Length: 515
Ligand code: ME8
Image (cartoon, rainbow, N blue to C red):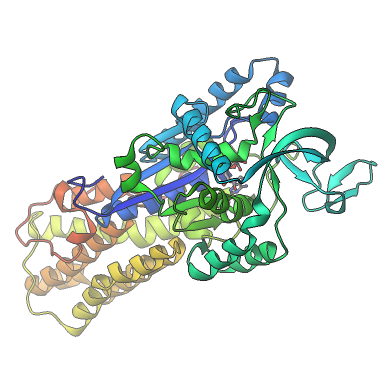
């Protein structure tokens, strides 16, 4: 949220839109937390941020799940979409829009992009026969399939059981975009992150692209193909278009011009092909600019095991939040998992981070510094005397944090940004142990004041920069430092706490975990 719309640079960031055919799980929560942190970082860094998430409600899988549960597809979609929206609330996500692909404006946007691709001569009708994966809504050619132990035809790449399907469908001339896409990747080396993903996508495209079946006639739960009775759009055509719908495509050209192309699509690693191959090809065809960057995070595993209903290790994000607290959970996932790689979580690992990183390293430093200012200086921020080399070294490393952390966040290396903050917290803890202000207070009150000023200042800077990850705890801590609500952006990192400022009574902000 910016102070004046129009003054600051726009930044449009999205998550994938989830399938609401079941309840949200930790993987979804992880994606929302990480994207929210990236969005908040940009907002605090002065950008006019627009942040979108939502639900991907069409497709055969939704229709089949609804039939199994004996409810209408619309009801299934609404019930579960509401659960995803509640999860955003529980996670403290700061969304500009929660989009549902059943929204009226989204149907309008999907029809429009279809018409533009058609006008470009990229859509044609043909008959299709092939192996269909209902779960991923994707077709496979014979050579991409194999037969499993149970004698079922499965997709070789993911083991999903396939059904033989024959129908007349519309096709998108994806083959035509093989060269343009390769050129696009060459010209835009930062389009895909992390870097390691670029090779795998480029290789796939270099292998040559086949035209893509983009309509279905065997069910009707989808966006109707304009002018073609009985056809609904392939779910990925409308799903990807949600990113455009949310910024006013096609009617609200002011919003569209301001926020499109998107700055960042945050997605999981299993849907890279859709975002890095199909999506730019659709957009090129429709004459719409391509997004600036797609970043794929890894998958989360429960103690190293894949989460699945049959194993019974699917954890409800709400349970984690009520057990450990929202900010510790947000911190844990972003610090523990290298963003872009797979990660594992367990209750023990969360407790360990909560106690060592938050309660010990961060909370104790803040609590000791603030309570000594209370005790020795009547809760008034002391005026620092001459700075020693140690004082200066610590302040310099805190002052250098904004540039360092920003550098990491620019390439979505959230974990490295956090590591940088915690390195300075560790330095500050060593500093306070070495300076022993509680002893100094008996002999040299001026020096005590200088040490506590330096500590309070380090806590302030780290806390400003930790806001995107732990919005609520950092807000409390900034209150305890009497930092005014309008002095909490990254532009304020370079100012200093004003000596003479009166502080409220300190209280612990990062308690140890109690089972
Ligand atoms: O893919 N760990 O929806 P979805 C981390 N509707 N991330 C995970 C995960 C895990 N265990 N499981 C899933 C879809 N995700 C499509 C997207 S976008 C135009 C359409 C991530 O509900 C997954 O990678 O299956 C994806 O980014 C998001 O959760 C939604 O997954």
